[in-house]
Image (cartoon, rainbow, N blue to C red; front, side):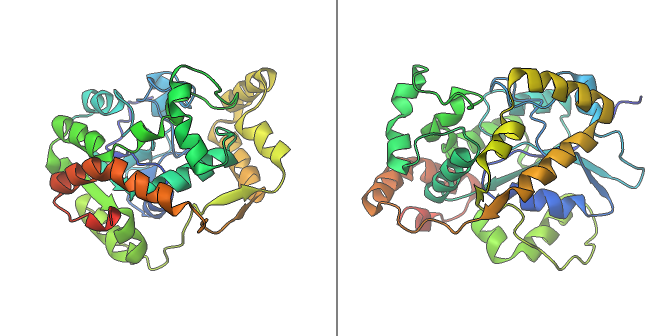
Length: 303
């Protein structure tokens, strides 16, 4: 099999619209986006989130690409947070283009926490309680058994978006990076999509339908999600056998079952306002740094 080197990486941040953009790009005739969406091959400093372990396994994710596909990509949301992923990607393909999707960290935290509760990564259902538990968890205490890595519960580090973008700019040239703000993406997905295609040197395909792909969710039947998202060890062994036999088809089937077992929920409007204000103070320096790096006024995130 010839080596297939991806040239597009959507690297995060989580809960910032990456799933929707991935789906929009995947439908473009000149773009091939791999399944699963998030292989996380390059972020091996975060345990138990990588779908593939070897370079050969990783490149097999792209073997169905056709000659018409000028852009070959993936969308692993923890690459931006990872200490090593961006450098690993640069060493792999220095000419790759990078897309970063960013969101107001207060909203991001609420959405991410909700997502982790849904996935059984987090058992502290109150936002402030989970936030206050970070120091305790740094010592590997009270980590929910289904959480892949305690680093995923260090919310303050995850939300240091200015620091993470600064690291990205120190590795990749700015001309190879596109920053997308969640607010812009939600307000005008069509123009965001068109500007993304321009960044990728592709023609607009006249897409006019831009649904919200990854809404906040809650589980219908908890046991089903536990089985597919956090299977017992003996099931994981069987899963790996089936994955080797059926490839991505088995992953797609599992994803469909998980989606069927979920229902959308509205954003919680009852977040403690005093805690929100506290978070804005905590994030103010990071937001100011990010504002200077990307040359955008982000004061509304702090007010």
